[in-house]
Image (cartoon, rainbow, N blue to C red; front, side):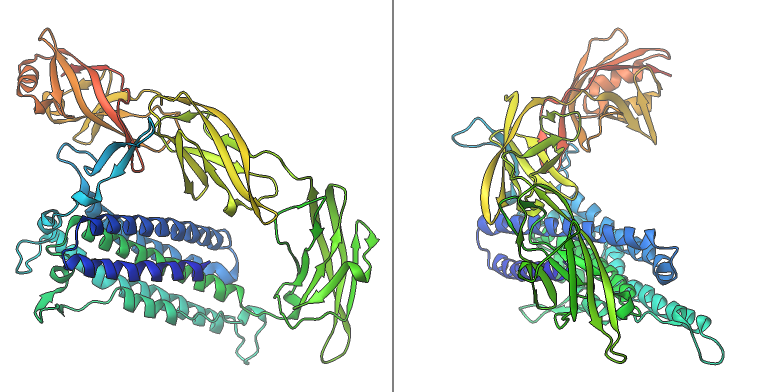
Length: 576
């Protein structure tokens, strides 16, 4: 898995450098759009790396009570802390590049009509990200290289990240060496607990050096020396800077994932010997059908291609297999048998090998199961939350087809878009008027891609949000007491229902405010101060005056999709 991610990243990194060079030649807005696509690819790569790293963290944590894992478990959280700190800092800068004047999370999002359909989708207009002043104003006091405090922090984090990670790796190696000494008897003898885990972090340290290479001065193409941040970020279009920052985030997650893989490989490779081997069952697909020839392979735990058993005894539900029902190839005992009836079959027996020194026959037990099912004619699709798809939201969805590998499954619908998540799929309805959606699913079955009916599902609007005012470290909900200052300058927002298990945000863009007996005032934005007359009403209000916030205009934002006309309930407050 790590090698696959590494190859993909190398390709993305190469494309990234090519496009930055093209941008320097002032090639048109097509390049800006391409950089946007590249940025999205990097974001997808980050999701894969984070999922892999999370599994590694969990494996180390769940085994922290074991002597082999104890040292790693006591240090990996420091790796996560360093990685998350730098990653989150870069994310804050990225968010600042695209935030709108009215507080929109991404001002470059725009709705477009899909030609030939009634669908309205939200896309990111990368062609408009051609200005550089946003990041210039965030990091630099001037073009001479003087940095603002956030620029100084950026430089410090970039310079210190490799050394901070290296220190943690050195601590792991040192503690392992100390543990070996402590477990070894004074006379030089040691039992298995005294075997040292041989950690080798040279590859990760080289990657850290290369991916986070720092030089105080860099010579540009004109032969002029520039400060590091000036050379990399000053004067670049927003999308180019965004892609560079995402590339750094990708490098952070890559290093984190690689270190975790090296830790686990070192732990799992400790003290391997013949007694630690076990038999495993390899199959070319998850299940077999009654029409299939079963080609399952029984292998030694190490999967040594030079392995050839001296004796094979295999039984299927207690019935011995004949020699023409299996063969030995590349260290595997490969079955070649058709099973006509569906069900679960016990594959038992022994694989025996002579000890090279004593010639004693050592037997390794086989105890596996084969599941045989009939070929399916339909897919299994379910909406995880309340069995409906909510408009504009990424609905967590489980999709499977019996007997079809999960990585070959592709869902589709004319009224929605599907995206892959670490836990399955997300279905996001895109048709603003559709009340239901029909799902189709394709998957590779017996080497061929086939289409399956996934069923028809209702599309409903999400439940309304609860109106509130937030600011000064407080959130005031309906019926609450509020100061004039907070009412004037606080942010009118919407809160998801507490039992609605979806991850999205609510963006308020306008509302009506009625203070006491004064006529209602319309506010464009999310603060009463946006309308001077409304602010004056609040200022003139006496203690105990009722204030009603109504006609709240809002949108929901889930991922890159912003859906207008999200309902937020009216609410009232009491001036204190």
